[in-house]
Length: 347
Ligand SMILES: *Cc1c(COP(=O)(O)O)cnc(C)c1O
Image (cartoon, rainbow, N blue to C red):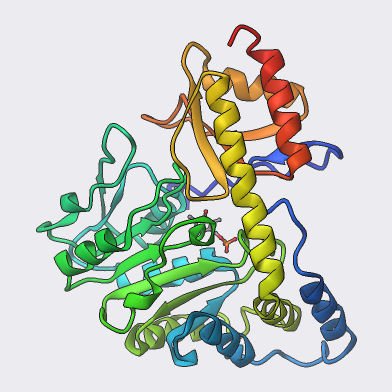
């Protein structure tokens, strides 16, 4: 236990009025239909256990993505789904391959389950080169697409090359941010028995507080995940979570409106950061990853905090001069730019 190194989530301060751009939550509230469905579910049936299979949710997800309900494995946030997937597929004699710059929880799961890993360096522009993954002995591959915390996305053709180059192990593609502008690998599920795609409702569906995510893949992979889950917790999704998540999938208009608003704001923030002298990686996510030459990133994050604005800084080799800034509402983005103009007057 002393050797476990837990994941450290972004700060969730209880100070009111802070502009919270540090954990990639959606700045917009969830669909009103989701909120109404949760209230309705709370009125009836909470004395009973929920459906252990979350059938209604599987069906809603399947119909949204054009797959079978049997190809969907829902869980208590995608973090739980990822943990089960690491446990189910990556305890192998060979290491699991992943980028050196990516979602830091992957390394935590490896430590928890004693899984060997091999980090493959992203290039000097912090991009994943899938050619690096070919021909290496691997017990699995995990990548985030778009990647975190860079926001960079790979095209579907690159994902397909990766799947073809590692046909004998599970290739897990974490698409937490895919709805903000990347191509989903979901259409490849039918053709690649080793593909597992993981989604969350925490980002593009504004439901981080509800804890819902899922994996999609061929039936044999989903069955393995079900075995792990049923050896751990029969009811990871409560009645309120299923009701809210189903309604969120049904409200497609709201989903479209809010994700497009985030994408528009992201593109505006990118241009405004350029004007202030930042390097900004092209982002396909609901955040930007940016650095400003001549200004230490940790220092800048601390100064922004004094102005009531939280952003994320990672004390990690290669990326410690970058800030990850979540896209907020228009007002929050304006507050960010105003504070930055004060802190970087000579830009
Ligand atoms: C936010 C995030 C998750 C976790 O999502 P939850 O469903 O809230 O657990 C997983 N992967 C990546 C890359 C993320 O950024």
